[in-house]
Every structure is written in structure tokens, then in C-alpha cells.
Length: 342
Image 1 (cartoon, one colour):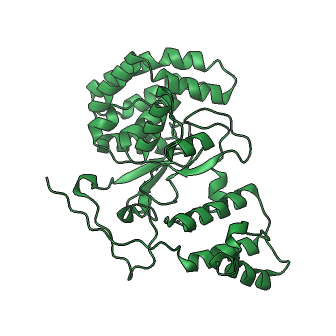
Image 2: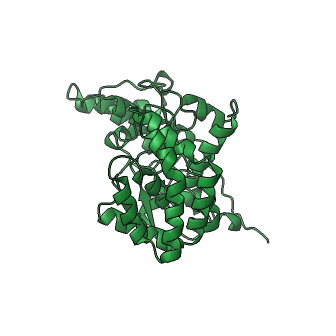
Image 3: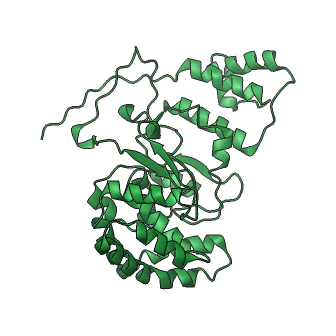
């Protein structure tokens, strides 16, 4: 099949208005921009100098999240990436904090983690960000390779924010739980994460029964029971650990068991995306879920992601028309996407 791709020349220079605003934000918090942005012609320097004159000593408090936010804005500006400034705030970034990299499982000391776009063809936007280890960020840019399990975790992590054919999403093991605030594009993966976390802690049997009752039809309910019977022994073993991070890893590792995956796959294929979405929504509304579920309707779910521009910033709506995506990359939008703070 022929593919259509209209290519427009990209500007090599960052957007000057954004650079000025970034410099202004540095001054507002009493922070000096990195030295490479202090050249006399730099828009960042111009904004910083103007901000210093405006704020003088009346600056805002500086926290690690503020520094991270300013670094992200500079990164987006330097690389010409779209940056969604309404939702991506220091407060939002603080909610992404992690003690370990979800891909390598390396411990992250304060300041070691890198806020990364999970989906590389989207901008720096809420729902597309996670804290990863520096080793992962470097490897994604052509650095050292991962081992087999790390590569699988990264692939599943990226699948969460990529709308997949339902059958393909059903076949993915949950070898990494969704990081906090990450949006899940595929309803079956939201149900998968919910069902896994549902079995942890006291009262799991009652929660599982209530979720089972929400499934449509005897066949799906019977398949769910068989899945629970396969997963439960591994969850119970993991539940003995007092370490929350070790428990999380044990839940993820349970999905390497062929029986767990086979029974989940059978159950998932009995459900449509709409049915999965409805079950997750009803579970959240009835308080069955042990975590808070946030549903975001389209088109708000990808607002600021710049998917039509492959995550790149536009100089202006007038100067740069939309780039048409290749036909093989297009997909219909999901009705609603969930974020599971796990």
C-alpha cells in the first residue's frame, strides 16, 4: 500500500519566545541558567536578565522538582520538542518520583533519575513521562544494550502509551507495572494492571469476587477465576515481603510464568476494548480498585502531545502546517484512557 508523507523543513533554531520565557522562569526562582545559555545573543539570557530586573530579590522557593522542571523546559527548547506547560508543572513532576528505575531496577538516589518521554514520537506532556535511570536514557539514544528482561520491560512500558490492536495488547505480559501518572491507551492493559494489584493485601478474595461479578457472562467470569488461581500463589508468596518495591517486582516477575500468561490471554481475548474499559470504570466507581484510577476522555488524553508533529514544537500555527503521518502509523483514538497511580 502506498504511503503518504508530507515533509516540511524544520527550523534549526529553537523558538526564541520559549527561550526568553525559560530565562524569565530561572530569574523568578533565583536560579542562574546553565553557562552555555549565557551568551549575549541567547534568548534565555535575555529572559533571565529581564526577570532579574523585574523580580530583584522577590524570588520563589526552589525545590528539586522546580530544578527538574526548568531542566525539562531547557531540554525541550534545545531539542525543538513540544512542551505542554499547563499540566507539566513542578507539582506534577514531584508525583513522578521513583526510588528505582522501572526498566533496570537500579536504585535511584535523589537527582539520579531522568524524566523521560516514554513515547518518543510525542512531546513532553502529562501522561507521557516517567522517571528512568540514566543508563536507560543513554541506551535509548544508542548506548549500551539491555539484557532480555530489561528490553522486555522497556517494550511493555512503551506499549502503555501506544494504541495497539486489541489482540496485540492482550498478548503482552505485565512485566512492568505502570509508573505513577502514566496514561494507559489500551483498556485491556488497564484491566490487567488492576487485576494484578487487586490480589495484594488483606481482603483480596472479596475484591477479586467483586471484580469477577463485573465481567460480562459466565465464560469470562470462569476464565477470570482460572487466571486468579494461576496468579494467586505467586502473589501470596510475594505478599510476605515487607518491602513494597520487592513486592512490586515479584508481581511483575509472576508474569513470566507461562500458565499465568496463558490464562490471562484467554480471558483478555474474550473481552472487547469497550468491555475492558467499562469494567475498569465500574471497579473504580465502586471502590473495588486498591489504587486511584483517573480516566481522561479523548481528546484531552493526548492534549499537548503533538502527535501530528511527532512530538516536535511548532514555531506557530500559521508558519508550520501539520505534518501528515504515514498511513501505517495512523490509528483511531481511544474513547478514554486511564492513568493508574500504582
